Amino acid sequence: MKGKYHIIVQNNRLRYELDIRRNITIIRGDSATGKTTLFNLLEQAFTLGESSGVDVLCERPCRTLGGRDWNLVLPNLHDQILFLDEESRFIKSREFARAVKASNNYFVIITREDLPNLPYAVDEIYGIHTSGRYRDMKRTYNELYRIYSTEEFTGKQRVEKVIVEDSHSGYEFFQSVCAENDIACTSAGGKSNLKDAVSKQDKPVLIIADGAAIGSEMNELYQLMRCKPAVKCYLPESFEWLVLKSGVIDGKVIQDILEHPEDFIESQEYISWERFFTALLVEYTQDSYLRYNKSKLNEAYLQGRVKQAILTAVEGVNWGKRSI
Amino acid sequence: MLKILFGEAEHEIYHPPTYFDNRYEDEWITDSLTVEMIKDIDKSEVIGTHLIQSPVLGPISTKEISGGVKTLILMAFDESGRIFNASACGDNCAKWIVEIGKRKDLTINLHHVMDFHEVPDFEALILNTGVTVHSYEEYLEEAVKIKER
Image (tube, rainbow over all chains, first blue to last red; front, side):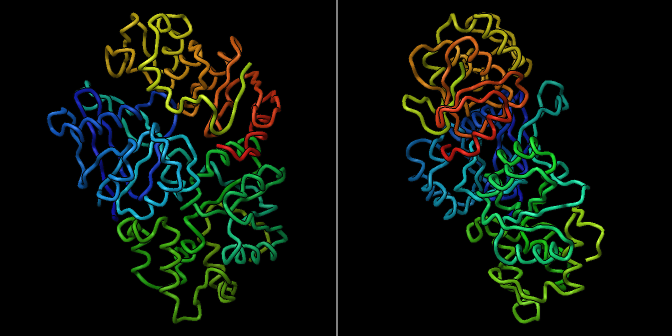
């Protein structure tokens, strides 16, 4: 499934509005914000349809998924938006992760657990807040907000050390940039090692990681960063996304895709967006001097104009006074 | 004292709100601690054992209070020896978990690292490592080292 979907769920007293645009969306946050109520309304609407008194308005069918037989039900569902509540213990299982990867549905999961088996994006972790009364003043209006905003992570101070999640091309690129600017640069060797790396830092450090799949690390990383204000994060979708965004690959098509990737990324083919951006970059550079290889960086990406364009695409990072 | 176990626990109730609906006792609801927790977390008033006044939903039954408050009530009053999964509670419940831990020996388990940073005088025994932490910073440092969730 691909695309962005606007969902309205309402009864006489409550109205929820959500925009869902990736295969995995997480809803969490404080107690008493209406997460379970939203799920219960969807459950009632699915079970009883119109006679439930709940309106569910969306281009795609929306339903709940849960219970002991979820694994029998899921293979029969296609192109739907499925809501799962925190009572569903199976959401953290490898079996569920495999089922999500094989599915062409979108999943909206209400949970505070990190779910490391699922590659979800930092941008798709939401809380629910009440934004006031709806027109008739009888109905309370609820909507989603992003729990982790980019502004909180980046800073203006000069970077003294960079830790890159990746150990391949992305790391090689930033390692080269850092070397020219007398900045130490190391690879964490995977997203699950970032916490360890952060907890040992006291100097200004910049973490660079793929925002498209870092979701499961964010709760703990965010708390660690709050205790260590010198640690900042830069979370582009992925290094490949950054290259595409930089404009070094000509083409209106690419810029069009980057403006609304959800309309181009088939969720069953790409479990997370960074895989799509890698495939796109490989495809668009295969016959050029910028031929991209994820496991080993093509030297052309480290040369003058190309390197400068990629660095310009990096927002909110102070690399220091030396010109790059 | 508050004792925290990260990961699965023997006798764990993974989804305390469901357990609450089937096992709560009427007198728990009108206890002053419950009244205060419902007011703070749900912004609602306890009218009686079976009636809560919610500013959003209007008059509701006890079974319609938030999952977080249901879990807190179980932590405070249930004597069955079960361990309640505190990951059913939002961070706005953290101070109440600590408060209940001051009133009784309370063991909880967590499937995520709960954020206790707004709780003053935080102290807990981390059962996975046997370390007693005396601040949120010590708790976080200890928690991220533990693999179980």
